[in-house]
Image (cartoon, rainbow, N blue to C red; front, side, top):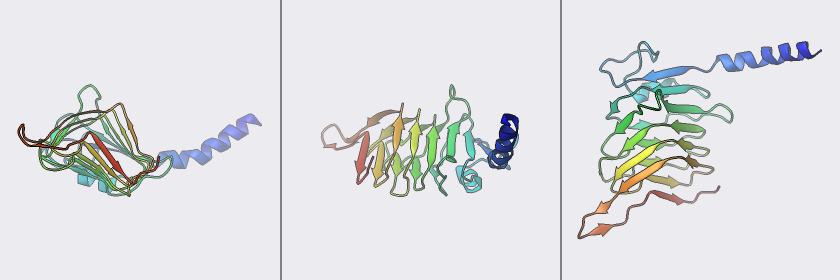
Length: 186
C-alpha cells in the first residue's frame, strides 16, 4: 500500500517538477538561447523566458544593465535570480537603479548591486513586489536609498550588506537611507 502511495505521489509531482527550467546569463558579447553553453547576454531575455518555478543563474562578471522583473512567480514556484558561483558574485553596476521588482514571488540571491552614486535608488520594490526575498546581496554606492519599498507586502531582506548611501556633499548633506519602506504590511 505504501509503495502504491509513493508511486502515485511521484506521478502527480513529476509533471510539476519537470516544467522548471534554468536559464543562464553571462556578460558576453553574443546572445544565446539561455543554456549554460550558450547563455543569454542580457537580463531582459532571461526574465522574458522565465516562468514561475524557473531559475536564472547569473554567471560571474560585471553587468552594466539593470534588472527589471517581467512577471510574477507563484506561491511555491518563485522566479529565482541567483549567482551561479556565490564565491564569485556578479556585479550589477548601472549608474542608478540596478534592480526593480514590480512582480510578486521573486527571489534575488547573491548578487552585488552598485548604484555608482547616481541620483536613483539602487533597488526598488514596488507595490507589485509582494513576497519578494532579497538574500545574500550587497547593495552599495547610492545617493538616494539602498532599498526603496513602496507598498510591497511580506518582503524578506536577509543577510544583505547595504553601505555607502551618501546624499549631497560634505558641506550640503542630503538624507540617504539603507532601507525605506512606505505603506508595507508584514
